[in-house]
Length: 439
Image (cartoon, rainbow, N blue to C red; front, side):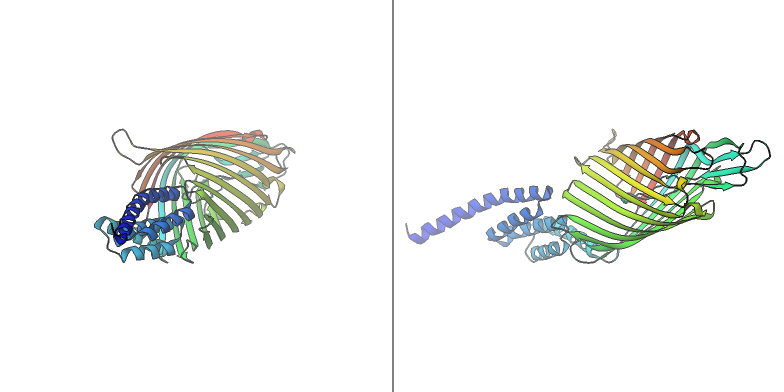
């Protein structure tokens, strides 16, 4: 046998072996992408490209490489790998896959990237505290303490929602020392709307952008009209992404204005710093710090607040998610009885499922919360007793997603306040029906 024939036979055997190994290597690279080990996956894809002798073999590898770059947030490199793949002859299936990925990359790099959502909710609240009042026993004079729940938002962008924080002020009409306590609490219905618009302007091809978010929440009570609320919140700032670390860093400036009973009762400016890290694609750690410079009406609530918010999210399976969250808030106001420190712990679980009649997109959620609040001074009518609150909360949600556009949820929450000042003790059930449309 001639030497040239032997060499050709050896080369052919090595090529067949390389192609067989290539299938295993491609699978290994895909598994590494799923684990978030993007750098190691790219080394394997490069080895496959170097070993591929034909255009037909390089095309699928280049598209897989572009997918891996996209998953890592390297949109510029994904675009380059995809362009190299599309320069080769591709079959119908690979061409369709390339077109879908091209659209996703173009969306990420477009300066016209808008997202929006609108939510309408019907709420029944068994215990609306719209006034806690100290009334004189004899001469008709009074001291009125108004403790109104203040709307706020979820900072992790699950959509705007109304939550409560403790804020009170006093209108002292007389200093009658014989005044007695009277609590006024009612069951009431409420209608809420919550709207959110977000724009992202790309700063580079690696997932960094300038982000602007505007949110509007309104609520109307059927009976307790003095609890009608409107909150406008906006924030803007750069968001930098580092693909090698799978970390994101944000610097934002926020503004909030709130109205209650047709009177502007709160405004604040709030610089915020945030950080996100994804050690694995299914594990995410978020943390942010916000400073609020508050201007309120009445002025007793003027001051500032510090908020630290940390959340860990683990997608255990494609349908199971566990979330843990801690919040720390310290508010300093004009008077000590409006100043407090509050710690909150949350633990939640979400399960996606298919209904018994075959419809997919169902989900159920459960969450437990515990808030511990320590006020810094006694209120004028509390006889020197400083307020301390322990507030456990439970939440159950059942919902249905119709594609990516529509979500319907029903929920029930139970909230209990155990306070060192007896007149703040209460328990409360809330029932929600909410419909959300994403655009």
